Length: 81
Image (tube, rainbow, N blue to C red):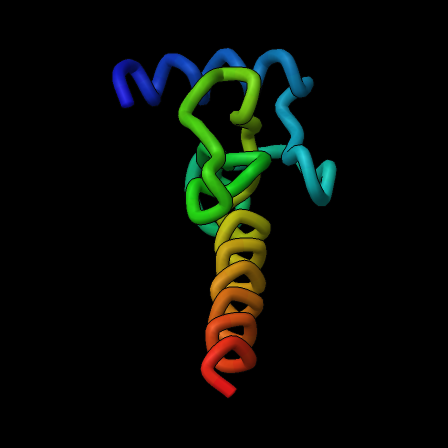
């Protein structure tokens, strides 16, 4: 993705400096650092279009990614049965 840092910075500003999920303010380091989040995950055919992106803290982004991966693994396991 081109200019990811610029897009992230713009989204942080639009969101008032807060995570799209937990609404906590972003920090410079640690679990509350701003990351780009795909509203519709790429594994569900989400795109890199700006309309599909939001700024999320690292903690929320990782937690959501883990939940998506677990759900995908369950779906694959049930399809194999």
